[in-house]
Length: 123
Image (cartoon, rainbow, N blue to C red):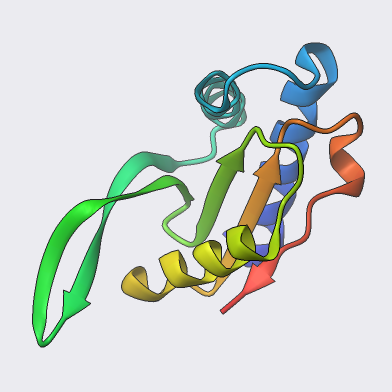
């Protein structure tokens, strides 16, 4: 599946989840609903996939996890926060490195209109 098509499915599913639920739910609830929406669309994904850390030539499994890895190609970071700060974007880019993924989508569900707030990040 092409990268733009994958992103289109993710964004469509996220908007589909946000419209009836709106802001205010926990991140985990939005993530669960997003997974369900992707499943209904037939889009493959992995949830809470462990992210290893490379340190001094050793690959370590730490407590880092990818919220969603969609079609084994697009990293999705779900949030339910007041605003996405530069540190959140830096974290997303840091999380892309271990898996060699290029695109990442930070999705903050705690906003009035989701469609205006999503910006794809590329490592």
